[in-house]
View 1 (cartoon, rainbow, N blue to C red):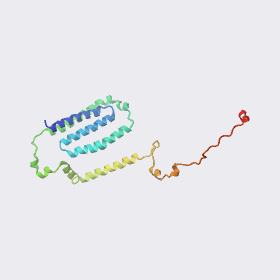
View 2: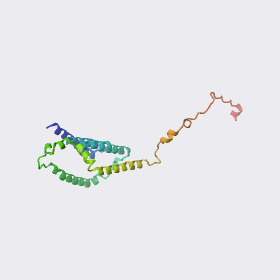
View 3: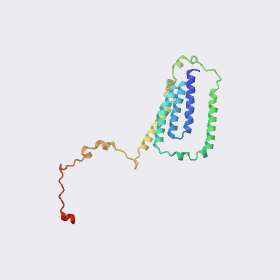
Amino acid sequence: MDIKSALFYVFSAVLLFAAFRVITARNPVHAALYLVLAFFQASGVWMLLKAEFLSITLVLVYVGAVMVLFLFVVMMLDINLDTIRQGFWKNFPLAATLGAVVALELAAVLLGGFRVSEPPVAAQAVGVAAAQVSNTKDLGIALYTQYLYPVEIAAVILLVAIVAAIALTLRQRKDSKFQDPSQQVRVKARDRVEIVKMDPVRPAPEPVAAEEKQA
């Protein structure tokens, strides 16, 4: 067994364990962290398969952006775990049936890729020029030439989504406290500190007469 095969089995074992813990962890924060671990292991498997672009994209997009957003949402929301667990066993048969159907469909599609009917074509048969081009470069050429318009449309959609998310978060709530930087910049020293002139020595109080005390 070579080093690539050993790494493949290690990444696959950790990936299966992390994926199992994603659906079995009781704490949603722990489940999200296990999903991050699963993404890293899948990225390692793709790197072994020489899919460098997909590997780096998985780390940058899913781990660096999507899962960080999930963690912020999970940690900022006050999630009641008891409410989430209610009705779990009631809906478990339906969920298990749907999961089994999806697993069978994936197996029917993926098992065809393991049947090798023809020997693999060597890189020399394809040509020296094609062998010198990396997967990342070839994918970049295809994205920005043949699929240029779909990439631009996807970029516009993501830009609209970002602007909409910012617009939704900028709504003023009555129960939230925030600072106005423009007012902080325009403030002056006399608005912050008020100097009051006081006597250095306070006069002693006058003695009270005996009649006033008896009264």
